[in-house]
Length: 422
Image (cartoon, rainbow, N blue to C red):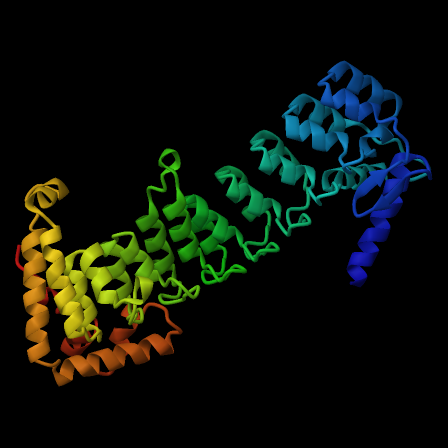
């Protein structure tokens, strides 16, 4: 707190020296002079470089004037993409008044200008990121604009850069110390924004710098479930094409495997998107086996209708106990998958035959309860899931003081034995 007060006092003194007058007030990095004479702002909005140059030569302090929205000329130049005017505003030499340290004064004035916030709390860097002005954003970053200033919604420049899919700017901000775990008023982190856009390069950098993989928003969405939500609502023109890759990145980085928002878990989300690949990864890595799927029905039915048949077997081997009604429901679903459908699904597809085989296998399992070994496997994997706080258990099997064969059994290395022959 003392550091902040000292900084504010120093910046306030610098502002007064920069402005050469006591008529300007410094408050939250926003400047107001109480008059309607905002010539520099009007010249900037009109993109009149000649007028801007003339005004700055006669009165450099006009750089710090703000309009009724709390915006300086730099805000407006940034929003409109007037790069030349922005450079003119930033390059004005500050006149020194009785100070021996002109360089320090000029630097303080420049930082005041860069960090001035409008009525929404946005700095010029926020505006540059919002409007995808990468040239200006990189300029402000290079001039040491504060990278962790939050607007009134809690968004930092990193939030905005990631949301607008500006990869270069996001990486620059990270390199200069932007807080990768900053949260806005809705508790979104930059990683949530990266999951929303599906930018794997930004995700990898945020994760490398310690971004929290399981941070939850105000409505309890993790980055994993954020990717799922925006995949589901994506329009055809902005298809979210790399969902499985994003999910795989999060799982391999060590996100929780079963964290729920009250409606969805990673497993039910994967099944909803027909992603057998991710569902299998989650199950192999040790996620908890959900007892119910969508609309309160058993998850086995979702797995049967949405995924490869082998996911049904994997669920059962990992502890899911199907009811007779569920097996009957799966059997009734088979005629829905006609030969025409299976042919369209892919050359040589055996989906129809595999589903029939899975139903037969489920009926046999009803007659032959799981072995003691399978029961022990389910219990041990559940205990390991709890010990790792719901993260991947695969790397931990080798540390168990048991024979390699048993390690492989617990890791489901024998699962291919249960696969239906193609």
